[in-house]
Image (cartoon, rainbow over all chains, first blue to last red; front, side, top):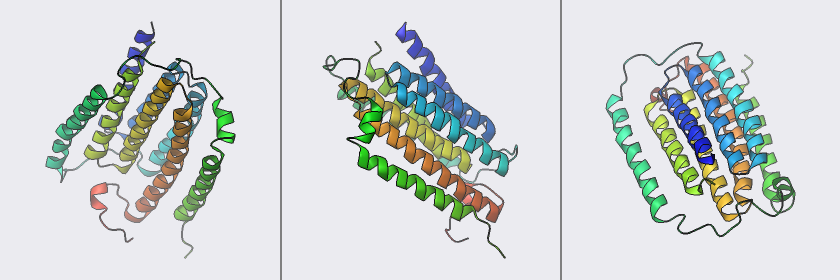
Length: 164
Length: 100
């Protein structure tokens, strides 16, 4: 049963990821990206990371996807990639290179990781995530808030139109 | 229980799709989406590793990656908007200088 669910999610996530990079219209790519992110959130649920799944839906599928759609609506209303491609040869070269990378990654995965049975219990034990964030990982947490503030100020400074 | 290695294999596949997207597309928006795909694949691997070890550290790291990704998307889209106001065209191959 779990395998069926995993297979379904894997097909959904992989198919939507392929759709993101193959769709010619950016708005279709953005919508497929949302499908992909929601599928990954479901995979987090299967890995018993409920809080992370929730954050994934709110931050990624909510905020980031909306940001992408908004940017596309502002910048390229319905415009697709057209015209001759000056680097066509290099782009075809990318496909075998990516295949090579996949082969390499899977070989490393097969040769090193996951030998033997899992030693730990399947359910993550110990403190919940929110408590860890405010105890053991308090300093990175604060640095993250600083990073978000910097990004906020930087974005506002960059997109400001110059007063002439 | 699905073994964690399946999740890591799926994450490797997603990462490679993201790399392919960065390499073959010309639209900077789609390139950004491909980068998001790669960050997501890394997150999935982190959570799978954490699940395997029975600790929460992988999930904490994935949470920080999400925060950084959110900041990165905001800054990146701001840069794209600024470039668009300057050039009126969006193709990464034509953007070879930093000067405006």
